[in-house]
Image 1 (cartoon, rainbow, N blue to C red):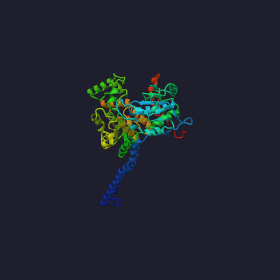
Image 2 (image 1 turned 180 degrees about the horizontal axis):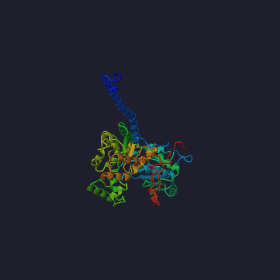
Image 3 (image 1 turned 90 degrees about the horizontal axis):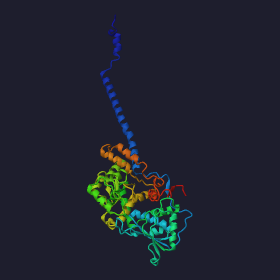
Image 4 (image 1 turned 90 degrees about the vertical axis):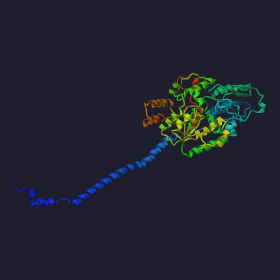
Length: 494
């Protein structure tokens, strides 16, 4: 048998399929080059894909951090109805002493404008409280533009700078009007004009109800607050300068850091303080007669969400919300209790921490000189910077926080983040115990917790369930905290 592999024909066929070494090497080189090109192309695809998405993600983050809540087409509406009549030149005079700090006085003054209208009285420019905690000697015209105030309300109420001399000996009464009173209450009080020509009101705060007042009275309160009660020119000028300087660095946060001695003593909140500091606050609370609550459990206060956030807690909160450490933060507050000892916890996370007094990079000593000894005037500067900020965050509720939030709502629902203190304290305590880490999961929980706490339009809250009698008025949301719906209307509303 012939071996087929030894035949000449087989050798011929086999020889046709022999690959020369040079061609073989060339094929390997081509194959390797093809693989290289493929791998390079695969590396370029992710780079190309990531490129366009970076601005989009950055834009989305910027929008979440800085953009205002949607206004849903709502706008300010303060024009009086067709039934609103011009004021009469009344010979009855209402004199007022506005009590409290800046924003307590501001809301009280606006209430007194409405009361004068309801009682058909001429309002004398209010005297300001000089005996409060701040011991400020400022007059009305030191803080507010008095001529503008009178002119802006001339179609609403007759206002004079001082009581006419001929009225100094006129029959007068001193009247403590009942808190949160209705329009009918003041219409009934008008009967006092039969016996008196001058009525003096020693306290102006919370004299009017928040709800169930005629729409024209509510809108008058808004005209008084947001248009007539303008700050004096020196305050307005410095406030605007500070805003410009802050905005030159980009968007900024105005932080109402309510970590002041009086607030901590009043609330009984001593978390994170030394025993000596806690004792000092307790003595202040016990020695302040008009503070009714004396024995306060600090732990219960904090767990219930009734304590101001500490500077350290504010830092954790802002970081978890996504604000970068480069963010400029303006502290709208008085002296922080413990000073830099506690403020350093926040500054370590956000170095660009400034206020009107703690750094000359924002305001010079010369610029602050005329305001230095007037806490109410410096509070007015804080108010301006807070209103104009990209984001306003109060670490605790209070007269300023409520007034600023309401004003920002009126101006188009500018971003205002109200920390959920009760919810945050639970998370902070879990961090401290090591049950949570300050990571993306923690951040997501904080962000989700505050989705609906950023100043979007909503109607004013009524009284809390279960509240009875006149106490129910104390639990209502302040009109000046949220003037919706009387002064904020749909765009097509006439």
